[in-house]
Image 1 (cartoon, rainbow, N blue to C red):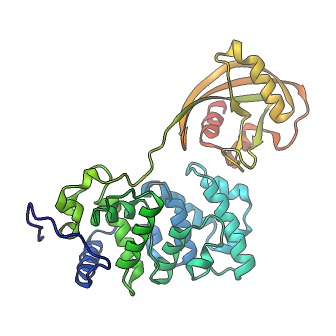
Image 2: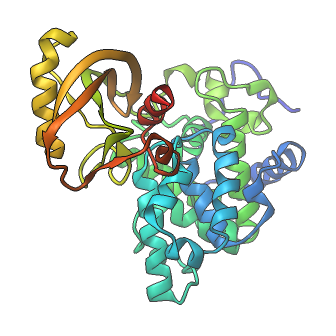
Image 3: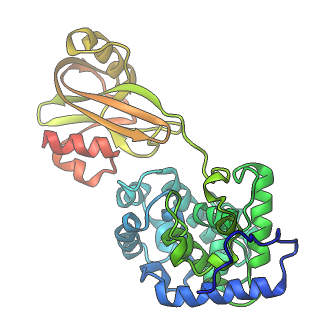
Length: 369
C-alpha cells in the first residue's frame, strides 16, 4: 500500500475534489469491499421493502443484534402488504428487545401508507420516501441507492466519522453547518453508476475499520487519501456523535394479583414504551417498601382503577433507556377492590408470552412465572 511521506501532509483538498482523487477513492474502496464485505441477510436482496426494514432496524443498533430480528420479521411479514395488514401488537412482539419501539410503530404506519397511497409499491424517489412516517433523508437515500441503484447520498454514524477524517473537517460534524458539508461531500464522492455497492462499502469501512476510538488505519484502503491520518489529527477532530448526559431516576413496577391473574396496562401515546404492555409502572419519591406502600397503592389506583395492598419487594432491576439510568424496584401486591379501566386488564401469567412487553416487563414476567 502506498503511504503518504511522513511530515508532508497533503495540501487541503479543494472543492470540488479532483476527479483523479475520487476515482482512486472509489477504486480502492470497492476493491476492499469485494474482499471484506460481511455476508448479511439484507444484502442478498434488492427488495426495497427488505432494504427499508433492515435500515430502520440498524438505526442505533449493532449488526449482530439486528440479524436474527430481521430474519424473524421478514419471515412473519414477507411483503409490505403483509406488514400493513398485521396487528400492531404482533409487530411490537417481534420487535421486542430491539428497543426504540417508535421505529416499529412508524414502520407499521408507513407500510399502511404505502399500501393505501402507492398500491403497495415503495416509492423510488428520496422525496417520495420521505413523506412516509419515520423515514428521513438517510433512510430514503439508503433505500433508493441500495434497492434501485440510483445515485442518492447517505450519511449515518459510520460515514459521518469516515468522511470527517477523510477531509480532516475541523468544524463540528454534528452541527447544521457540519451536516451540510458532509452531505455535500457524500454526494460528491458518489459515482453515477454503482451507488448501491459504493454506499454499502462506505458504511462497511466505517463500521469495520474507521472505528470511533481505535481506527485500524494500517488496514484502511483509503489511508493514502486520508488527510486526518496524514496530519495526525484524528484524535483532535470534533466528535461525530453527540454525547448523552444521563439522568438517574428511580421507578417502581407493581405485580398486582387477583386469584390466578395479574394486572397489566398498555402504555399510551407519549409514554416511554407506547403500544407495549407493562405492569403498572411509575416514578417514585419514597424508598423502601414500608415508606413506599401508600405511594404505590395510590399510583396503581390512578393508572388502572384498581385498589391494591402492596407487599414485598420482588427484585430491583437496573437498566438504561436513551438518556435515563433507571433503578426499577419491583413489588408484589394483592388486589383489594376497584374496577379495572382501559388500557389496563387482567391476564393469566401464561398470556404474557403473547403480549409485547418492555425489556424489564419481560424480565419481571419470567420471575413471576
